[in-house]
Image (cartoon, rainbow, N blue to C red):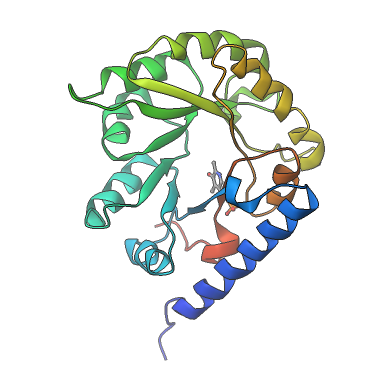
Length: 235
Ligand SMILES: *Cc1c(COP(=O)(O)O)cnc(C)c1O
């Protein structure tokens, strides 16, 4: 028999399992699950998986590579109420394509990218929700603004008319326990709120560390493989 695609029932079971774990982590932290948005990261998976997730009630979907994202969003255009979250490192020359398809960009980490996203706004554009990605490592290759430059970036982006700063985003480093790395997030969030008082969102937490992220106040979780299963081989 040829290998069959992932049965939808597995997807449903894993989604339910993750949601139960989110609820448990929220309860342990004295938080309401309703204040936490669970984004399903579907990178490397075909549009059909997003369609199945949609059938299971998923409306927040995350993608990290512009080209794959644009193709998938176009293919699924009929699913009007999907909110596409762009979570990957973005090149400025892709800003127009990203803006055209994204409801929210989590990975604004430099002024030039913010300027490009702002310039890419159509004439009648609503403001685009953006998060400022903070680098929790000392490796500039990992993406994200250095914490010392966060306030300056927040001030810059807050001045761009078509972007709305909603908060911060971070990825846990590989070499530090996530709880320890994420302990910095409330302070970094305060830094941004000093510039934009209602920018309260914190996007943090992936398959391996979403409970730790919930414990420090994450409002948006970006969960891939725990829900979708292992990612297919990259073509
Ligand atoms: C892939 C990815 C995720 C999801 O990762 P999993 O470990 O599969 O949950 C979250 N955030 C970003 C930025 C990603 O690239």
